[in-house]
Amino acid sequence: MISMSHHPILEVKNLSHVFPNGTMGVHHVNLQVYKGEFIIIAGANGSGKTALIRHLNGLLKPTTGDVLMAGISISSNLIEARKKIGLIFQDSDSQFVGQTVYEEVAFGPENLNLPQAEVAQIVDEVLEVVRLSAVANQSPHTLSGGQKRKLAVAGVLAMKPEIIMFDEPFTGLDYPGVVQVLQQLVALHQAGSTIILVTHELEKVLAHANRLIVMNQGQLVADGRPEDVIKTVEKHAVRMPLQQGERIESLTWLK
Amino acid sequence: MAQVTFFHYIHQETVLHRMDGRLKLGCLFVLTFSATLASGWLSFLILLSLLSCGLVVSKLPLVTLMKEMKLLAVMLIIVFLTNGFHFASRLILMMLISVLMSGTTSLTTVKNTIEWYLRPIPFIPEVRIATMINLTFVLIPMIFDNYLEMTDAQKARCVTLRKNPIRRIKWLVFPLLSRTLRRADELIYAMEARCYSETRTRATFKPTHRLDWLILALCLLALILVAWYA
Ligand SMILES: Nc1ncnc2c1ncn2[C@@H]1O[C@H](COP(=O)(O)OP(=O)(O)OP(=O)(O)O)[C@@H](O)[C@H]1O
Ligand SMILES: [Mg+2]
Image 1 (tube, chains in turn green, brown):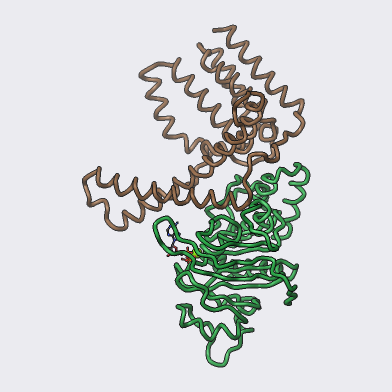
Image 2 (tube, rainbow over the protein chains, first blue to last red):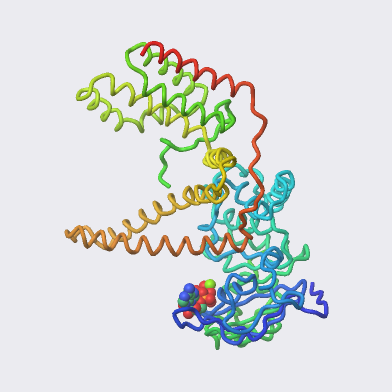
């Protein structure tokens, strides 16, 4: 499962972010991401998870520190960084820009000014992957919760990213919805994508991850193999998902 | 958004739905112009029959539409009683034109058509305007949804006991505004994350069908007849 090359594909160096109102969003974070990893970032509400991953594709600019992609600061080529690093937003359902499912997925490739025929091919392909081809002409708002989340994934997949970041993808989904999204996640990872997943619902997914990071008050307070880090999560206001005698492998909603 | 069919695009596979948006916009102008010219029974009947044909061809859910137009019917009767046949007939025609146009034309077609017409005009950023139109279409239902949600939540907390209308507007407008702005902010981030750019793939139009020109010709014919009898 883990195929780590020697050099990180993404590197966060001493990153801090202070919001204009003085709130410390991220505080001195150092982090390396290697190809093929499945990283989970956990932490209580307001611990800075969203703020951190928004730096990774340059949506937020560091107050101090830097983010490097293949050794080069991402701020020197933001478009490239955003193509390679896809982000599925927390509350992604309210951020659809297309009138139809097809248009929603086409938005990204159209921004890259690809020829119309190529856009159409990419969209068809991606909709096939997330199994939404049948609803291509519907309005995104008519989809079920799980389908909406998959549409958000499709919109990002259309950019053919190497790293895919999910910000709380399970929020508000029912059991079948969570399973749908989880299957998608695992399939993407198996197909070779690097996954960064923000969630505090460890019981749904931790079994699939090979690395667990915990944040607390803007700081990165734990980073390592899930079986090691899991023992400390309760200290940092994340619920301990394991019952007495249970193993990490049991922490998934996939059967 | 609320389940209203009136003035909403309803997807069907018909000639009118498939029609080239650029020609359809032409039809809209011609028909609207004829409706304002129309005076007397004959011109009214010409346009009415043309539009009725359109409604039948379009396969729009007529029964549902009729039910939803009940309120407008009351308005029509009032207009008829106060302003006479002349005015009321034009109102009927305008209503039918808008139902037909909005029911068979997707917002995307509207956007692409406007963008196409703006292309040859210099100094007009047609891509930006098209994006703005699109975002407006996205944001209006969202604001409406927010509004409904908030009024419900406030009703649940007995806001109706407050009789001061200024207070109630204040509680509604400010939270609604701040919520909408925050949503819009997130939308901008989401667009940026997907590399929004104004040099983007251009909308292409399928080759125009001969039938589309025929429909435009029919509308022009109606205009000529109406102008003749006026
Ligand atoms: N635009 C902003 N302006 C000021 N402060 C902000 C802004 N966005 C976030 N913050 C603050 O920064 C801190 C980190 O926020 P962030 O959204 O990253 O948390 P999070 O870990 O994603 O939380 P959640 O689980 O609720 O999504 C919080 O204290 C938050 O209040
Ligand atoms: Mg967050």
